[in-house]
Image (cartoon, rainbow, N blue to C red; front, side):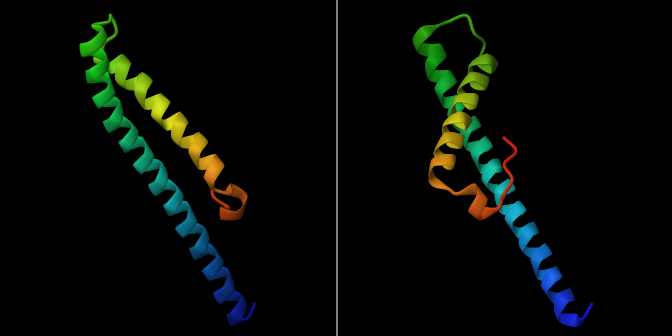
Length: 89
């Protein structure tokens, strides 16, 4: 293997790692934004409805809803094959 091949392989590996880091960053941002918004929605939901669900249950439901919405939006707006990224959600 010559130097150019080694450089090309190293650059390819570096690019894959960068793409994976970007993917993980996007997922982390989604999760924390969904959680923060879910907390706000749970507080409003509980005060308006006074239902039997706990805050934790409401937060979990709202967080799952926000994440699902984000996934659908992401799939509509990004070409995952072109990006060659893995999504763990």
